[in-house]
Image (cartoon, rainbow, N blue to C red):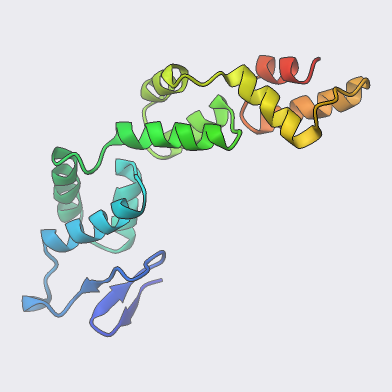
Length: 172
């Protein structure tokens, strides 16, 4: 829900970034869209799809959004490749597996081929990450009961590790 505060429109997720609607003729300009987009990019990397959605929620015209996104990409301020690399690094560091990361990238508009290339060229040892996630959650002792090891494997699969990585890390 957007609300007008003074001379600015604030939408969901807005902090101090608003759009001045009292400029000449009250018309939105490309500079307005670009300024908001750059404010969002200053906080963190965004995919093109994420940024488009956020700008659409602020009710900018589609033509201005497309023009602003193209300009940001040309100026190398918006890069799906850079976003995806940072996303993989961040979520792998949190103990998430490649399947969950791939799904997150797809939801943010990153093509499956690009996601797969980044996941497996990122230098992450997914098996070691699965073992580390199991160890952090359950401790270093491997339980003797099959039922408990199966529970640990399910936990790892929920974190996005594939069947083999989870089974191996849980010693099934």
